[in-house]
Image 1 (tube, helix red, strand yellow):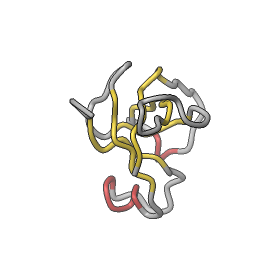
Image 2: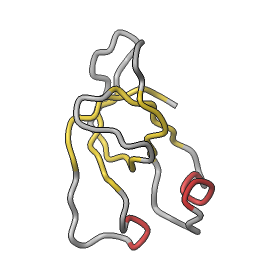
Image 3: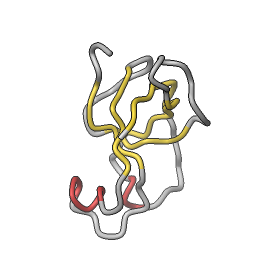
Image 4: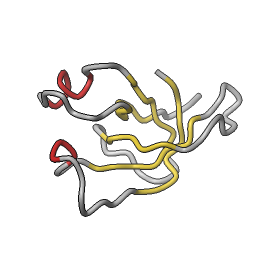
Length: 86
């Protein structure tokens, strides 16, 4: 798990079917001082996050199956919480 800041939305016309009806966001991982750490990545939103929110990201094998009930989904990062205060 790590924290990140939502920096934008992602829109895709052609995508794997497991992404249908899922909100895709671009997030910037943050270090412990809330400074950018590494490249921005795509994450699937599970909690209703929006631009500029600080979020908790979970990255685990089989996470999409456990959360969405989707077998063999190509999902790595999942937004599982919105952080109010660090």
